[in-house]
Length: 395
Image 1 (cartoon, rainbow, N blue to C red):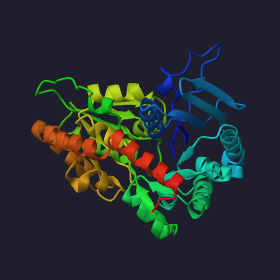
Image 2: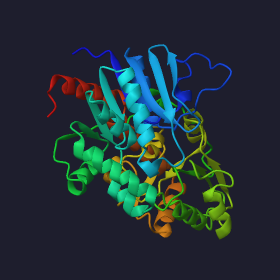
Image 3: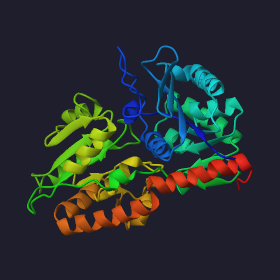
């Protein structure tokens, strides 16, 4: 079957499509929930000439809203504050209705939650991509919201006919803990050529290094406290270093800064918080020398491969889900026990004091990511999956 129109379901950042969409009228467009994997894949498919329909949600939307651009249509539905109480029933209904009203040739739902449940409710040919390991996340963040999400994921997984995963770690989790017995395909998140082509400014040899964390949310699983503690340790010997904390929960007067101030550890830390994707990438490229990723669990984080694609070395957890796999078991980045601030600080200090090693590790990481995580490779794999689903060749 010749695929012309592809439907993607998931969180997006509307600003990523501003050059394709018409200028907003009196009121600005909804910002979207964020979601660089869907954004980047949509851009690549659009560049290849496909017609795209994006089905998404936004907390600022009260009723359904549709935006149409050149070969791109975005359907927004409401995203309620207390949505987990009825397992996202209203969100799933709106998404399902939008898909049935504007059906694509093939539907692709990202994440095994409300978007996947809506895709399954349509009865249309679809692929579900699992981006996380639900039971492992629940173990690290045992709250009612995560319990509801885990139950939603169970329903999706047990019903899914065509399922891709972003890493072998996720595939293993779904098989062992969620008893998924059908075949899966490992298709990673991807990065566009523009990320690899960014040019980092030259710095003097004696310039003090800048560290950064890129974490979505301040929770036990993200482990940001340990990164702050490790940074305070290296400042005892390298007081010239600084740390920038990116991501929600890490801005001014947000959880990370409040915790750091309470511990008296806020010195030399810039709490930036969440930024639009392009601004985030530009600041990482221009300012950051080393990225510390302290997350206790990661399914295949964009926060790892994005700096690696710019030649920036990464420090990650040796037991943090898919982190070792993403870092080629320590060949493309440094692996440490990220539960121990002293171990993180030791790795940070090693890279801070050795510019040649920073450059070497950065180049190895760049080559690794370009080979395995380029958006063209990822998109080719998804297009093959779509075709196999429609032609009955999924194995």
